[in-house]
Image (cartoon, rainbow, N blue to C red):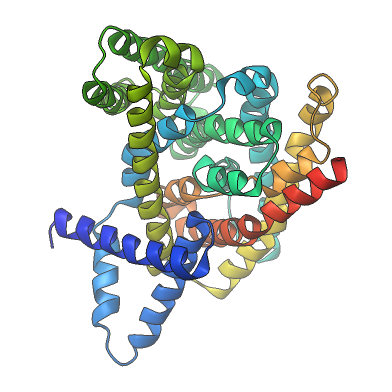
Length: 415
């Protein structure tokens, strides 16, 4: 079975499941697609007791897809560029300092809080795991997923100021979270003695600052090219080329491709650039193209997340550890946002209940699973993959289904 057939089957499954969701369930796409895929996979497990043909086909498809590479090296750049392109730049500019603190200091604090608590929790389960590996788990579970949360917040009618904080933080903390994960991963692989604090700072700085600078350059070049012509076909292709070549350059020079694409998307998408570089026709086509690509990749992503349960070893104590991790991850996120919100809330007129909504609305998604799949067996890959999967499924289904009600309650109480 070649890659075209696998891609065709995945798109076909995504289309069918998407139709079922829109026609019958009427849930947000991210939630509906993953829920249907999990139910479908469980049904395939049940059928396999009589005929294992479907199960073998599904397992073969998953075995042929390197989820980590497909998401982190290919899909993520497109998804983050599309998300940034449609983010309210003026609101983002107003909220830039809290977003910067949430996506950097917040991720680091959450990483160490989750890692430390999970170290002792796993010992209580008689699972002897080194502290550095618990920190790795903290780093992969701390970033929130803009892909999962964006559509849900819009449907919930969240206030623009609140939506900008959550989406803006999610866009940037993905890139920062990946860099933190890679830094700790290198320490865990090489050992503390083999890497100096200066090397850690250099690795972190080059990835983060280099990624942002590259994104600014790509955004500026894209803007200049689009400004010099008026042809919506070619201008759409220019934005596509910017993402694809920008990702290649970032990977070649070991810069953060996610941060580069978020920055480039914000530059190209802001109103000043739109007004001076795009005609109304071009703007419509660019927006519609990236919306369609965003929906297609999102659909495939959440179908793949649902199917990933086939490659996970669901041992009982691993699942229980995952269930215990859910409140720990939520509590650590709440605590990591507490001080920054207290510091900024009066200056920037925060919506009441901001911390509660940002905690419950900070969904985990495919990025956490992709990073967990990148762990080695020495790093307790199977254990952390199960814990991550349990947290992500609860996050998308449990939190995703209820965050709209929470937003409405908070905004109603505030009026």
